[in-house]
Structure formats: C-alpha cells, structure tokens
Length: 340
Image 1: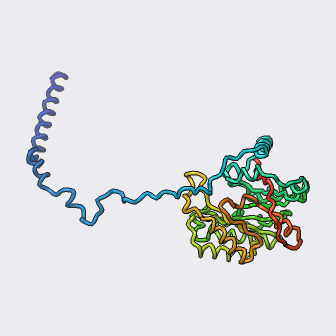
Image 2: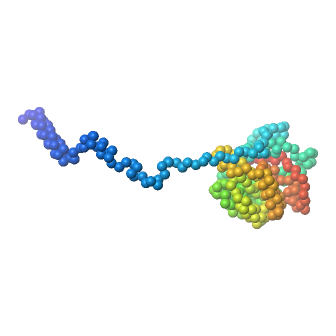
C-alpha cells in the first residue's frame, strides 16, 4: 500500500475512535435542564432576603449629623498687618534669607510684633530688647539642634549681652544631656511647651512626645541652673477644667516659673479642628488661678502663645537676680529666626 493510502486509513480510524468516545461521554453525562425549567427553578428557590437576618442594618452607612466647626468670634478677627516697621522687618529678613515662625505659622500677632515700637526712646528699646530662638520642624540632627541653639545664644550674648534670650526647644527625644547643652549656654529663659493636658497629648501632639517627657525637660533645665523656665497650654482642644488644674499642679511640682494660655487656632484644614473658642472671661480666670498657685508670670488670652511676646521687664529684672517687683510690660519687636 502506498504512503498516501496508509495515511487515509489512519485518518479514518482516528475519526471512528473520536465519534465513539463522544457517544460514550454523552451517555454518561447528566441530561441538561431546559431553559424555561431552569428559570422557573431559580424563581421558586430562596432569595437573598432568606440569607439575611432581620436584625441586620439595612443601610450601608450610618446616618449621622455633620458636626461643623464653631464660627470664629468677632473678637478673634485681626486686621491685615501693615506699616513702615512691618515692611522694613520683612524686607530685612528676605535680604538675610531667613525664615520666621511668625510667617510659617500665620501668626495673628505678626502685625503687633513687627509693627510696634520697642520703646519711646532708643535706650528704652535697647533695655526691652529680647530674642527668641527656635528651630522649625524636625532637624534630623543627632543632637536635635542642641549645639545650634547653644552657639546662637552665645553669639547673641557676645554681641549684645543686655538682650534677654529665650530658647523655645523641643524635647530632644527625651535626651537630657542635650537639654543640658542648651541650659548651660547662658540663656535667660528656657521654654518648652506641654501644649495640652496629659489625657489629650496623644491626640494633639506628635506621637513621639509625651506629657511626662516634657515635664522632665523643664525639670532638668531648672536643675542645670536656668533661672526661668516657661511653658504654654493651648485651650479649645477638648480639655476639661479639672485636667487643666492637674496640669498646672504638675508644672508647679517641677518649678516652672512662667505659663501662658492661648486659644488653639486651626492653621489649615489638614490640622485638627477647634473644639471651642474660649471666652475672654475664662482666660482671665485661668490667669488668676495660675498666679494664686505661685507662677512667677502668667500671660493668658486668645493670642498669647509661647512664641509671641516672650519676655517683659518683670522677667528681665528677675533674670538679672534683682528683687522681683511689678513693672509695666514693655514688649519688644521680637524676631523669630531660623536659618534656611
């Protein structure tokens, strides 16, 4: 037989085997249900409701009332900063390529601080001059910027020893040796903010900060010989009255001299909402309470934050070791500088 004939016979045998296999598969398969019968079976069977318990909530989301932030009271509205002094300071800062927390934090007091007069005479201005030093943001430095603080303070004191210098520092991650570096630099006021009451600290501050850690910073600065320690408390973040009282007691235990109360203001929509706007009478009451508890100096009001109006002639008198006496406050134009 030729090759072509053999190929034809092979194809015929394969075809017969394929038809035989298909026949046997069809005989063993379950008969399919007609389409109308299948549709009827689905209709008569259980529905989705039969698989859901009666107690399950039918709505996909809870319906709740939208809580709006309280409206800004009229007494908290400020005017646009302007004036020759304000413009000059702003121009000088740009020329020195310096950033200020006043601008970065959109401080509402910037018009008063930059636009005010340090004194009626040049001599008064020099006597009232103060400088506050702080670092904005995370320094990413091994020492948290402690040496930068110390060197800046020493330079200021060398150039103008009459200037009252305040350093507003972070907690240095709880590193007390770094606190010591700043405390021994010759500054007049060591400031570190507890910001809020202990119960709200995890929700208001950076998760790395704790209330007790802040207390240890203030206590250690005092032990290192700093004459004046200072802190700030924001109101309007959800604190209770008894919590504020407990905070003041804890601050007095570590011999904090100065405390300021201010209103929390929401810088942007990405930040925590304001819980409430504190009435002026409440700020007056907290000022009286803190003074009665023995704080050397208390500033309490909507715009009193720890980064504004840092010192008065009263504190200057105390820092120089003279007997404390009541004197009218003479606030200086204070510049908050941070190198780029």
